[in-house]
Image 1 (tube, one colour):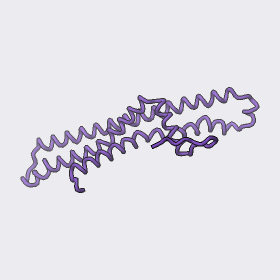
Image 2: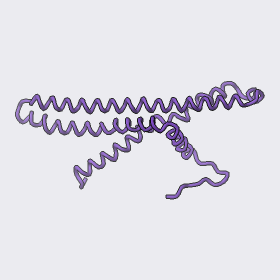
Image 3: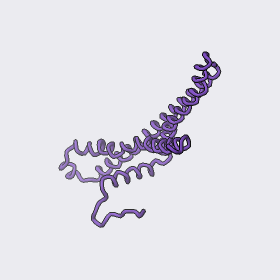
Image 4: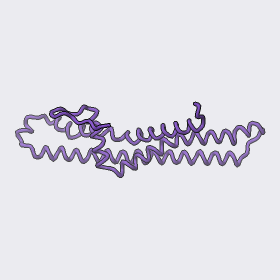
Length: 178
């Protein structure tokens, strides 16, 4: 697919600008964004893993216990350990995603707040007198926060896409006719 180039004098649309802004944020903080994305993938994939572990625990522990009329405690312990391990991995994924993602967003916001205020310092006093203090503060704070807020959920969204692909593959492997 060819890359779409804006015509001279024509600006890209809001969605294009948004994706360009996300790309700038990722390029500015690639390592932390990668950590956040790994955390997002780990978090979402443990959702799939928990369903697999629950299925195995049901097949190997619960159903045999119902048939026999008593529970095999070693099977229960193994199932509990597997579920606990998946839960810990899920918590680690959430921790990595939120910590690294939050750090990315806060760094980007701080960097751009400084850039806006440095630009303000370059402007003449007459310019400042023509603009309200509230508008200037809004541009230096709220506008910057709004510009970088979409970076935070992006690692989770990417992890959700990975989870969908894995779940689809598992569905096909489980029942190709499905």
